[in-house]
Structure formats: C-alpha cells, structure tokens
Length: 246
Ligand code: 4AZ
Image (cartoon, rainbow, N blue to C red; front, side, top):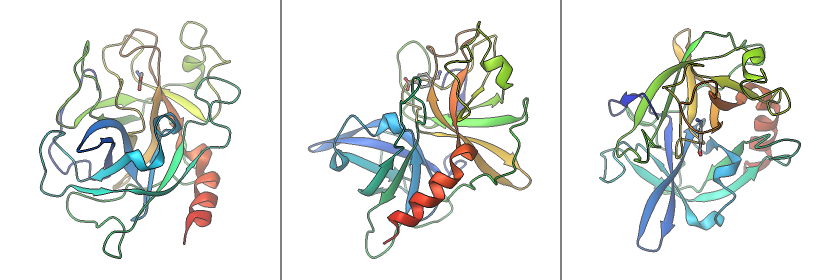
C-alpha cells in the first residue's frame, strides 16, 4: 500500500495473508479475504505460479515476521481459478475461490481478530466517490514491502474515467473490473497487495466490493488501481462454493 498507514491489529479481521512455503519457512505472497469459515477469495494471478500444496493460507495475521496472537495457518483443500481468467484482455476475470482444508474438524475459527466480510448484494451500486479501504502487506514505496498490515482509503472512480484513453482505455477495462484511487496519484495498492480486499462500509457492515488486481505501476498519476468487481462474479462465487462443498 502506497500512501497508507499501519493498521491496528484486528481492525481488518477478514484480511488473509497468502504465503509460499519454502521447506522450513514461508514468505508473504498475496492478500486474500475470508468470506465464510471454509472459503477465501483472492486474485487468480496469485494462485497460478506455484503448486496448490506450496501455498499457505494465514488468518489473524498482523506482523509478517512475528507470530501474532490470533494467527492460524491452513492448507488449500481445493481451489477454482476462473475458467476465463486472462481471456480477452489482460488479467480479465482475475478471481479465485479457495476452499481451506479443515483442521481439528473445523474451518476458520472466528474470534475478535478473525472474521468474514460480507459479499455484496446483486443490486448494489458502485457509486463513484464512495470511499473504501484497501489493505495489505505489499510495497509501500520504491521497493520496500511492509512487515505489518497497512491500509488506506480510496474512492471508487467512474467507469468512464477508468476507460478514458489517458487512463487505461475502454479495451482494457471489462465489466468485471473497476478503478479506485486518485487520478493525481500518490495513494494506491501495489505489488504484494494483490488478491486482498477493497471493502466499503455499507450501513453497519463492511462489504468486499473489490479484489486488488492490477495497475500500471503504483500511485502514478492517471494510473489508478484496477480491481476485480466482486458483484459481477456473485453467481460464479455461489455456484462454485456449492460445487466445492463436501
Ligand atoms: C501487483 O503487481 C500490483 N497499483 C498490484 C496492484 C497494483 C499494481 C501492481 C495497483 O501485484
């Protein structure tokens, strides 16, 4: 996250840290978001580089380099990368549904620091100007990644702004994407944040409207962050959750 600040542990209890095992240790790879006690959403491009057994799904994470009080690791039991991922245009349909492997006969155990986020409803509107929160352990500036979970506020942008030729152009931005951020630059998601959530407070609860997906660099003027539009994939999410249910 560029232009953000450190979060308070437990403030974003749905945040997932997707890590890669390297034998004895593991390193931060991508973000994700808890939607039920067995399912996590992330970006498809995060889950295609390694084997399924090389990934570790960590909940209750705050500091990347320390063991936090509520952190717990899960393996992936099953996952579904969108069948049309990267078809048509760059990072199109950048979404993956992950089913975690049960531990001690249960899925993710919810507590004060580990909780699911709401999925949007079908008729929700992505109002331009709505201020939403992005979070992650990704790059904060030139090169450095964050040790602790960072977050910042970004407004949803109009589709016409995102599709402007000076921004990304209409060919690149499909109906399953939207932009959020500032055309003047300075505040954005960055490398290592992908797969993580863009949440908006709707009424009393936080809803995941976006999944951090891509952008031309980070925090560059006229190159805002591009997000997978979760609402567009609700049927896909529900169908595949039902299929992956044991
Ligand atoms: C990345 O490489 C990445 N500025 C994620 C988000 C953005 C750019 C790059 C958005 O994972």
